Image (tube, rainbow, N blue to C red; front, top):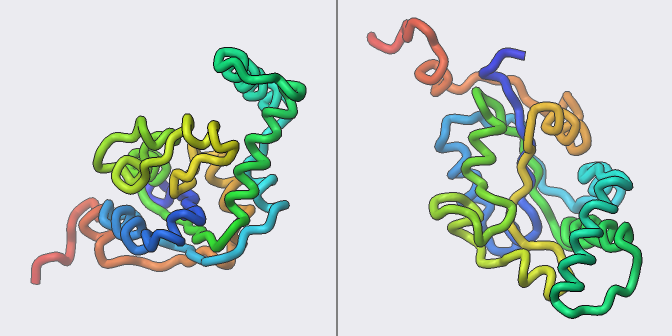
Length: 199
């Protein structure tokens, strides 16, 4: 696929929808010059979320060991095996993603994945720079979500890299749902010779 056709998945999580931030977030992404090629508001199903997060036993064990270490450091009781703590992380995410409507989108354009990641900010809202979606619009943190035993409410999911974007998009959209059309702005962004701008 041509560089200017790179695609990325963006999901506005239930906290984005409930806080009325759909338009703000779309505007922020759209302002970069990326093209919205698919959009739908849905109630996510658990099976789709588990497929989306795509974690294996090694991931569960690795993350679970970190949870065990953190619990020990905090003087908390260890109540289960490390791998179960790892599974709890995804279970909490699935519970959050299925608690209310989400907005799934596909954005297209040169460096779409990197541009959206930069706009969204760090997964940990506290570490997100001002000017990013998470930096500007949320005050949640890993510390608070861990204390509450829930998923961090960080507004947006975005793909990390190309193969992941392709895999994730196929979970939420059929190829027929992804529109192929031309925006007038693509001429100023991509036309090599800039033919046809002057009258």
